[in-house]
Length: 252
Ligand code: B30
Ligand code: ZN
View 1 (tube, rainbow, N blue to C red):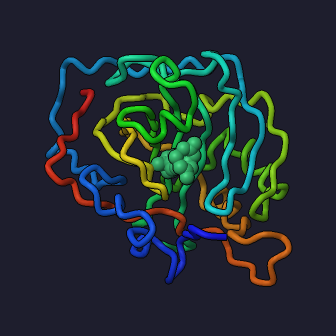
View 2 (view 1 turned 180 degrees about the vertical axis):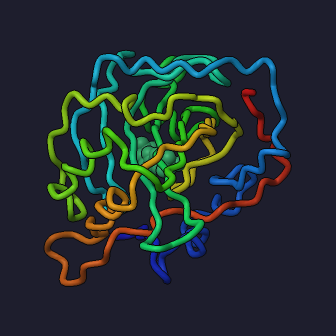
């Protein structure tokens, strides 16, 4: 099928601009956040997460990452406050991670939300400026994370691209660090179609996970069960993009 993209030598981030010219646009993500160049904004309030009603549906391997999807037909799971003018509904979260012994690679958790006040569907929001709010959390290696086993224990069920398993009643709040102080800037999806539609909220405090837990993500594969080739799912992240005059604001 057409519009193939991935993280390999020939279909990886440096080739994305061929099918997705917005890859070279003016508000692409991710960016390298340098704390000293961020501007403290006293008007930025705290981030408030209302995730209490556990609206997760399933966990899936989409061939690029592992994704947990949420019921988003009402406002049961929303993020508000901070730079956001409306509550944004949780649609899914997913991870990006590096390879074994890969120093300085970005391990991240992305919680993806959309503005259901201004848009009818996620798709409408995803292609319009400020339609999405993504909460980004850095993963750092250290002690074992107390709740990440809830995710890693399900990974064997979604080893191959296209596999989906029920995953009900999971509240992602258990994954988050205790402080939600953040940086915020305007950017894009970090994967094709790279729409410039995201208000990024990047949490300063990392989530600590063990090497062993991170290793379990690398048991996933990019490829489908029927394919002859099996390529380990790792290094599924985009390198930093140019800032192009944007300002990064800091909540404190
Ligand atoms: S990320 O958090 O920036 N890594 C998507 C969401 C979050 C990130 C990356 C991608 C995403 O939703 N991708 C699918 C977007 N599209 C597919 C499409 O081809 O065109 C689905 C959609 O609207 O509903 Cu636009
Ligand atoms: Zn992501």
